[in-house]
Length: 139
Image (cartoon, rainbow, N blue to C red; front, side, top):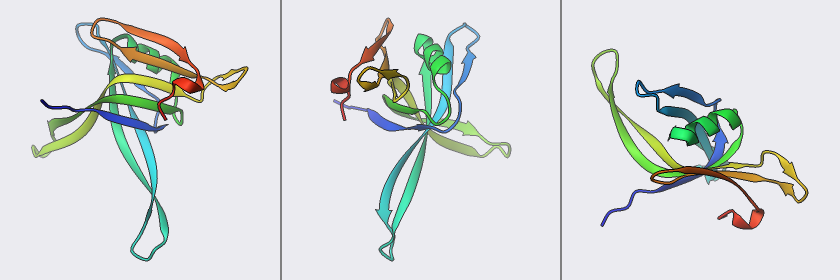
């Protein structure tokens, strides 16, 4: 048995880019930055930012491009994939990319109790959007 799952909580580094395949399938790309604090060799605390490329497909891609903007906090679940490509010099390059299966918008609009979260989940045959309460967030 094998398992490939990644969970990210971070902020968008740029506005999402929505495109369509030749067959008409929506695909959305954006970057997510995560931050952590580490001690360097001298004992000083340093902020370390890690960037992830994220790809969404179908209705989920259209929803994300409609509501997400640079700086917005998101929760992303998906699979980590290695993409191969050639640079201008013909040299083989590799990029790690997250193919998202679940996406939650964090901290956007306001409700009576404070911030609301919106979830966009993909199932094998359908995608749904639902409002979540603070008790539904897994962290």
